[in-house]
Image 1 (tube, helix red, strand yellow):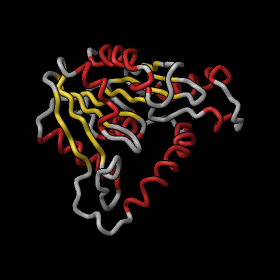
Image 2 (image 1 turned 90 degrees about the horizontal axis):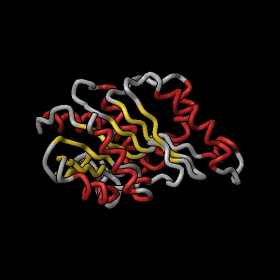
Image 3 (image 1 turned 30 degrees about the vertical axis):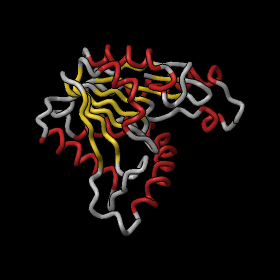
Image 4 (image 1 turned 45 degrees about the vertical axis):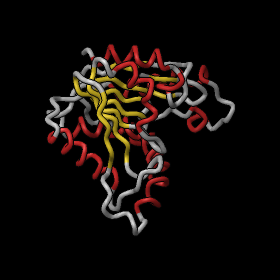
Length: 227
């Protein structure tokens, strides 16, 4: 799914993630610099050495689906999504360590989360669960599918690489219409190597499209999860 407002955003849907073309990393470096600046101070705290890398709450029955939030968020961002899907899917709501009041962990955060999520999938005997991730969670969803494709089903990446138009245009007055064609071209280029990938855009939403356009968002999820 892809949303474009003054800050354009994206969601890619696919069955498997693959390595992106080199051009991706030039844009991704901006986002990861921001992420690193937020995460690094938390990882240096001496008192955070024995906490799990995530907490999980399971709701509903049916096909397993993992929902991973992004920076500064926890599983509460999925409240409307959960209400709409819990009758048809077993939803595993992930809350990452160090955000929304949960204790941080020591060490390298993202590799540890990836390792622990794959271990959780195996321990719970989840058969190729779908993974829905928002922002940082979308990056993690792609990382899981890239490193363990045999364990992961459909991936829905919700704004995993936000297209913040003024950063690219260097003009704070930039509007959606000014950059939409460029944003679409960039994202289409990045998902080209991913099997069965689809790019969806919602120009009425900002970064948290599950909150801004909840009905549209759930409708797109249902279509993706049926594949």
